[in-house]
Length: 280
Ligand SMILES: C[S@@+](CC[C@H](N)C(=O)[O-])C[C@H]1O[C@@H](n2cnc3c(N)ncnc32)[C@H](O)[C@@H]1O
Image 1 (cartoon, rainbow, N blue to C red):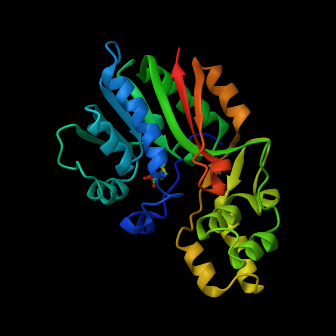
Image 2: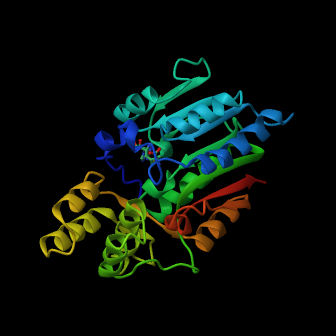
């Protein structure tokens, strides 16, 4: 299965200002990490003063423009682009450029960007082939010495999370974990054995939401808890790489891992975290 173009079914929820919080949007500290690399590009004498944003993420576009870079946001969904643009502080800025296109079909010149930023972007690609193609495209349009900064889901060897839904529900009810961590553990870890393939790194998000619906019918979670989770329902096939496999794949394609960043305020920062790769 290659180049599967996937619908983005959560536009309604994602298009709400109240949801511009982690895990859906980068935290303040994560925004600082993106900003650090934007400022490096702005100060560099050799890198193009241009940032590619994979998606319409308003915070990233504001950060790039704030650093004095041209922001080129590419999103397949016109609806997401429109909804997210409204949340920008710098939405009328001349440096804010928008392109409606599939990332895998972008037609941009080689070495055009000093920086690429993606907030859980590559997780939206369904196959290993598409991830590899995407990293190759990024390597081509990024100038040598440029940065690819991302926040996304990576499985690591250090953290398995809550593999039993009963345990995560219990700890949430006992106020040991926040709603955000409860949501993320159910969404990413509790049903991993049923919906994830360690061979092709595909994670069937549609199936997870079906399983969450089942634990509601069985009475493990309440109707209001289910409804809050279900507002983020989607039917994507995500790809969640083990971290070392992703780094290996990118390093094979002329990138080098420069830095990793975990905002330790959330449990989910164990598997939704940041990475900066440099183009060699
Ligand atoms: C960047 S991701 C994750 C959302 C992000 N964390 C946020 O809320 O800022 C979601 C965006 O990627 C877009 N998208 C998904 N697959 C795409 C593709 N192949 N090409 C272009 N845009 C895509 C979707 O339309 C959606 O707007």
